[in-house]
Length: 156
Length: 190
Image 1 (spheres, each protein chain N blue to C red):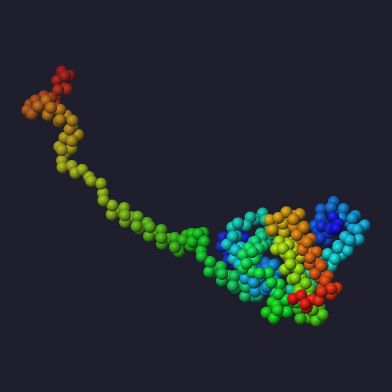
Image 2: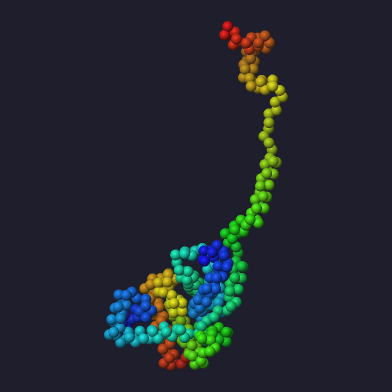
């Protein structure tokens, strides 16, 4: 059966225990031969890792990774940035403005009322009155003159 | 720098690669035990890092974030069966130009031999342990990461990481001890 402190021995060797627990383990180590042996073994092992052969990755790896990045399809952000470059944006904006202007000038204008003379215009303005005359059947020129001067007669 | 990478800055990415690729490659090598596969994994990890740079929060340590990406990628690839954990013999890796003994050519032959035997023992122990033990042990022993950072990279509690590292270190210690006492002939365990 292993000692309940054994689980903490590697963290103790690595200096990863909280101060209170570290003090407890130290006290325990003073009286537990089994844990003393395990601690010594762990310390030797940790120290021996420095003697492992070093590994040097291939120098070609950098070039290969950068080539893989170049081969990646562009992201949405990269596509947008490419579109917003001045060399693309300025001609595109100019083209859009020209197209807009062309559409505006080519659009059919609204029909305009052609006024032949001032008399026609006056007739149009007084159309309601003329209709009323038609209703009462006034066609005589003198009657019309009397009606036109009616307000003067009313004042007198 | 990661913010620049997130904005698509390839130069910033190249600087990050230069600074961290050896650590990632070493981690991958300890994880799968094969140099060629470790380099493929390392390349994939950095491509993934570039594509996911926007998910990095500047509050997290960059190395922790990087090792979270690396661990998840290695775990996924090994679980998908893309990579078997090899830990081939040191002689075989040397034939492929895979390993260089610490200290270079000036080392004494007996030291070089000791390094290779140690490599064999550690490789066998790593192969026999669980993937999470292997990941935690590698981050702790070869990258010098704190338990708290390893816990963040593995998305585990510190107590769990303490336990993983203890079991892994003890397993390696017993293999190394076997080697040193000669209780099992090293050459017969290839």
